[in-house]
Every structure is written in structure tokens, then in C-alpha cells.
Length: 131
Length: 425
Image (cartoon, rainbow over all chains, first blue to last red; front, side, top):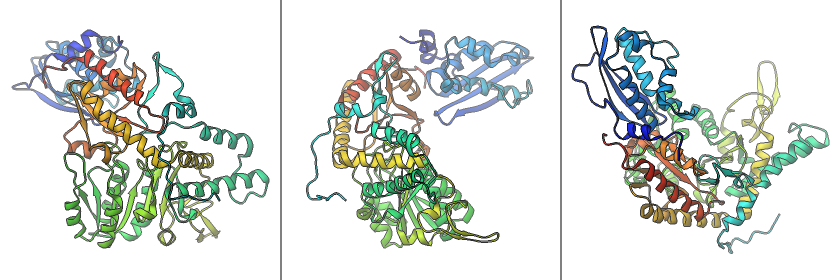
């Protein structure tokens, strides 16, 4: 019935990938959209120039949770250069659904959290407009 | 003046289906479904009487108010000032000059915080608020308290969303200078015992501000019966245009207060180095106001008085009772927040197990159903209830049982789509 809630989006929401707490993360970041009540904790382990582990916990809407699930799948195991080069548009393409302006913040919560982690681990400095 | 027949209150039920014809916006389809507007606590829809009042003002007598010597300016001034009388009647204000126009309830509260608050609140003074306040009746007092080194205290709520009167009694022993609370919670719908709470505050020597944003549009309000010192509400939630709002204050208090903003209209005399203030209410109305919106608020007040606020209240109470009965029976996994129907205004906040309120609202939109999702400008209340967010359906005169039936059917579709929700928490 819906362009937004496609089966794979709902599937990622019901059973999100990489939803766990890492044992020895290189960095941890807590991202939130206070207006929506979405809150996630994202962790990253970097080893020898590779993002070996990504973990997410927290709660949020289907769009933010599916986005986190898809994003963590995408960056896990990738060289840091590739992760640094992954942009907001790439994530929107990965989501594959039309995101309305009102829901863009939901879709971008995990992406912005990742940008903070890349900054903290010295992989890529935060720009003023990470989106 | 029309004769007032106070002893005979009309309580014949409202026919919302007939009333809907007064609200042209409701006659449309959204995503192929009849628009079911359940977000009136955010802003109400406007009746034709209000829309036509705006149209007439701009087509026939648009002119700045006060001091115009020509016919249409006199017409505009008469309509603008006449709207105060209509609003005074709606809220039982003894004197139309106690009606100060503001943009909304938020601005009215800020006016009191800046004007009365800066002069009367000092270091260590106590202001008592509640856990259920809208940010509009919280943040202005935080700013004042920070500036003056004053203390804020909060009346807690029970898990059902009722103010703890026993704790309130204890807080009053701190001899607060001001107590400010909402008459009706915009999130839980709780109707607070404002007259009794005002009496208690006065006994303790405090002034009282009541936030009537969710009361004036939905039930009979009489500021004399409440006995408070300040009363505020927004026009746009009460069938009037955005940009219209009201601060009512007791005359001697308003007269004792310094201006809020300086500029034209709020002065009697201006010299290069000093000025003399105008009389109330104009002392608080610097600059050209939203003339059309306030005239529109007068038309909205007339409309509500015409329907009868007792009837509006009975109608919404019946709707809430229907919703509180129907939703738990029809919608698996729903949790409702707030008190029983007799203690509640036309607001029902809820959550569905395993579905974020934003997703609830998004799916309902596909069925033409408009609800709000988020914290409804009550983040501390959501924290108190340990909720990240809620979905909220809220009612008005034009809301029908069929709207609530549509909500229940829409929510069943949400449940069908999402199933049990995520398997990890």
C-alpha cells in the first residue's frame, strides 16, 4: 500500500542488522532527534585502516532504524577512505524510498552519528553541514 | 446588547455533521479519503464566518487602527476594538479594556514574564509551575528565573496525569510570588481544578496565571469564577486566524505593569528623551497589530458563543468517552494516556506497541487522517511518563464519532502493516 513502508524497510525495522553493543569500540556517539524522540548510540571499531565493526542500539521510527541498519551493513568491513567518502545522497539511494522533508531528519540520524564517529577517530573532520 | 438568560443553558447535542458545512477545509479528500482532521489542539480549522470576516476586512475597510480620520479607518478601529468586547464575553472578563491583544498564548505569557515578572520577581523568589506545562508556560519562567536568580518549583502529576494537590499544598508553604498552570493539558487532556488551585494560591499570597490555550476553545470559561489574575489563550486554536491571541489581566495589575515593547500606539506623549505610556490595553500593543486576525478572533468568539460552550464541552466529552471505549477494544497493542473522560478535554494521546508515533501518523495520513506525533511541546511531561513520544488525536466542534471510527480503522491498518514491531528493543 505504501511507497515509504516497503517490505525491506519494515524488515530492517523489525530485525535491524548490527544492533548490538561493541566490546572494544574505537569511538562511541549518542545521536538524537529530540523533537521526534529518536535516540541511537552508534559505535565503531577501526583496525588497520578498516572499519571492522559497527554497532547500534537505541530506538526510533521505522525510517531511522532501517536507515541505521542499511548504513551499518554498508560501512562494515570497508576501508576508512570508502566510509569517509560515503555521502548522504548515497544513503538516500540505499534507502530507495522517497523521503519527505519532514522525515529527512529521521533518515539522517544514523548518518550524522557516523560523521561524528569519523571525526572522533580522526578519519574525517566534521564539516558544518554533514548532511 | 442582547438579553442574557443565564438560568437556561442550551445543552441540545451538537450535530457535527451539520456543523462541518461551516468549515470549508473539511470538504476535501486527502490521498483519496475524506479528510479526518484530528489535530485541533495544534490549531483549529476556521469557520466560514471567520474566513469571510478576514475577506471583508481586506476588501472593504483595510486601514490602520486608531487616529485615522477617514471612514474606513474608523470602521477598522471600531471592528478591532469591538472584537475585545466579543472576547470579553467569551471568557467572562468584566471589562473589555482588560483584553490585551497578543500574537498567541506564548506571547501573552512572555508579556507577563517580562513586564510583571521583571518588576516583581527577585533573588530567591519562588514561582510554582506544573510538570504538565506546555513549553510556552515553562521556558519564559526559566528565562526569568535565570535572570533574577529565582527558584522554580513544580507540582508533580500522578501516573494518570492528575496534579498532586497534596504536593501543591506543601509547595505553597514556600510562599511563591506566582503560580502558573494550564487549565487543560494539551497532551493528556487533564482538566485541572483551576478555581480551587487559584483560591489556594491567593491564600498563600501568590498571583495566578492560567494558560487557557486548550480550555477556551472547548469549554465554558469565566475568569471571574476562576478568580485568577492573568489568563491567556491563542486565537488560532479557537477557530480564529493565526496571529491572534489574548492576555486577560485584572485591571489594576495591568495598570501597574510597565510596557512590554516600546513603539507606536503604546504611548500617550513622546519626547526625545522620555515618553508617557498609553492607557491599557494599548500600553501593551506597540506597533501595527494583526488587525484582521484580531477582528477574526471576534468573529470566532461570536461563533463559539453562538454554538454554546456548554454544548461544545458535552460534545467533546462524548467524543472522548467514545474514543476511550472504542480504541482499546478495536486496536491491538494500543496504550492510552491520561485521565477518564469526565476529567479530560478533547485530547487522546496514545502509542502502539512497537510502532513509533511518527510512523503511526505517517500511515494514518495515507487514509486522510491527520494526527500529531512527537512530544507536543511537553518534553518534561513525556520524560516524567518515560515516553520518547506519543501520537495525539484532538477534537473540536466539527469532530464526529465517524472521525474516531475512522481513526480506529486507520490504526488497525497500522498494526497490520507493522505487525509486532521490532524484535530487539
